[in-house]
Length: 187
Image (cartoon, rainbow, N blue to C red; front, side, top):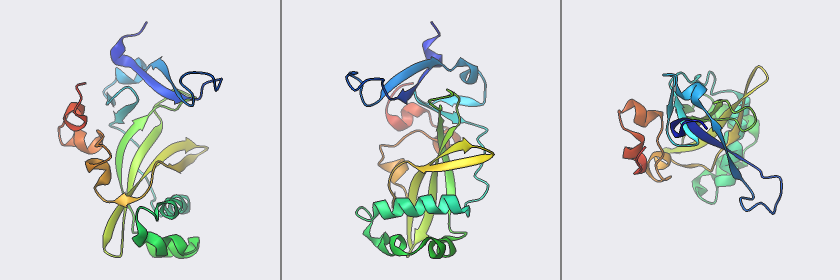
């Protein structure tokens, strides 16, 4: 058995709906290959900080823009001021929001199939009508590039770090905080 400090999990779908952990259960594995290096810092049993994460090269990528607009459409109930952004077509959205996104790396998790730390979480930040917003996206390697998927709904900027409940991220690491300072738990 591997040491507990190197134990991590991914969420997988059980083989049977009769499984008591349905619809997702924890698949535990030895992550020492990564956690013994200085590149990775364990946050909790599912997430880590990759000190050498790959930056998002182009926030004007059409696929990123489409994902953000999809999330906006799903978020109008929570943020009704975004209704006009949700109603415009993809081309108009692209031209309106071009060069209007910034991002913040949050953390990384392991891919459930490969058990490698390759799924990165980012906050995409943007302004609309003088209000700042954020949306969490996941980035996964796909072919020669990356695929982006949604990880929630759009909120006013500051939600993820202040209310979500606050999760430990790259920002807190750079500020010198421990994960226990942010989550209220001991590591």
